[in-house]
Image 1: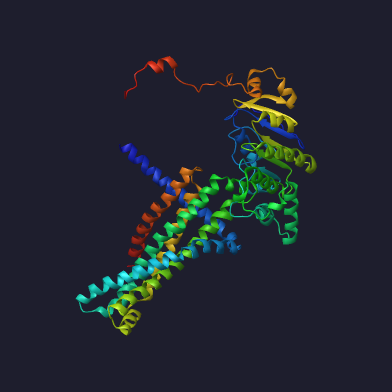
Image 2: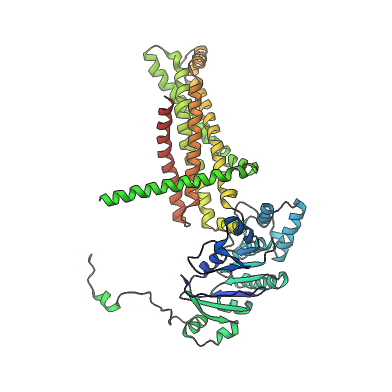
Length: 250
Length: 253
């Protein structure tokens, strides 16, 4: 999947990872979070080598991470409140009163304190993602990972999520990684952008630097051009030849 | 031709191996889950209590049919009084565990498989892993143990209701003497018969629950995959139940 990929993610910043579909952005996230192991190379998170961790050590490390899944991945049997309370109930012995306060603060931060008693099925796409975000920050993680947070959102929800990413990063001092291919949105929120293609980083820098990058693939991606280094046509046999050939069942 | 056969044989062995490996994972994780019994009791309710209606109704009808058929047959030999014994042995040793397990696979097994499959498809299991919560411990083991506990209880209820149904037809309608129905049953049915029934229902409970959670947990995370997992839960369970039934019956001879 990757060849010669080298990325440094700075602490306390919003780092975006972009790239055409199928370049392994999600795989990269899975490597960082230890959901899959790399065949080679080295991945260090908070100074720890992901390959060398035991399952128990990995789980300890994961308590310092939060992840926002594409569709929120809320637990459908539980209410909004219980979803956010879930990590607290599993990992701590806090009193019911304290759990309530923590959950309500986090829900307030994403603007959904009023929705605490709703069930996930009653939420819109943007709302579920905000609840999932509250759940991801309830254990006060140091690293927050967003997998395609903008997909399928209306402009208002999108603006809300963008603002939350920036605000949570700055107020809580979190390190954020955002995987996305929405060029416009990313450039308003990221401190640093990596563009992946063909298994390696083809460009990196601030969103501004990326816009002025002269490489063909970067131009195609940033400008949203239909044809370029990533071809419009899926690899196929010669067009004329295929049209003229006799198909066997005709 | 031979190569293909060999391949499907090794595939089947591989599948069996991974199911057994999965069972070991569930057992290793069980003690810790037993400490949080409220998780299990919730699942006993889901698999057991919610299956009660179908179990009670089926038990009643199976018992009534036994009463009718048994009466017809025994009447030929003039020994209608043995109806209680015949119906009870048939229910406790055979029909109770087997029919309950088949219904359990259809009612609770499919629910488990599709629930887990959907949790997989909507990333809920991955989300738990990312929250450092082991889904095997939090989700799969409670469902497995809930099924293992619920199944023998359901089989017992099925048998009891079935005996009542046989009594209803045999004694109330066909006119078998009530006293001899019950007393012959009590003297002829031995503890071994009951033990055999309990052993079967326990084994079927383990098999059905294991197949359901395995199919659900490893379902392909698509609508089609979840559908396939649900179907193969029922099909595999049915075959395994009947196969185990033969083995256990032979073991008790």
